[in-house]
Length: 137
Image 1 (cartoon, rainbow, N blue to C red):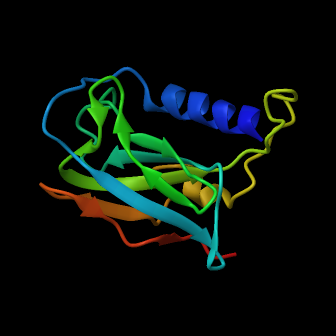
Image 2: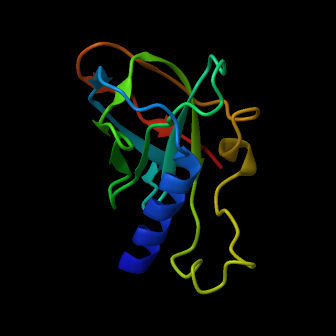
């Protein structure tokens, strides 16, 4: 299970890309649920709705066993810049590293793309405790 969590963390970093880090990060905590149950080991990536700079750093996290997450923005630190975001959520099996060509996202594909994800979040100055993202069936 730990190897799967490490793989998902690595995937989140890769998805986050090499953007422009900076100060002004706001603490952001949230939770991911599917059918009211926690989604553990999921990668959560926030994409700014204003896509003016496609190389901008994307805050990301991996969900804990209870579905909770705390965003980080690499390399700037914990939190996310204030703004409006499209939220992406993916979850791969723990053995995805062993079978990279066969690994499939276990969540509905619409949550994996900024063009199709219905999930939105606003990060405001100060601490942000977001309402849970419910993925449904």
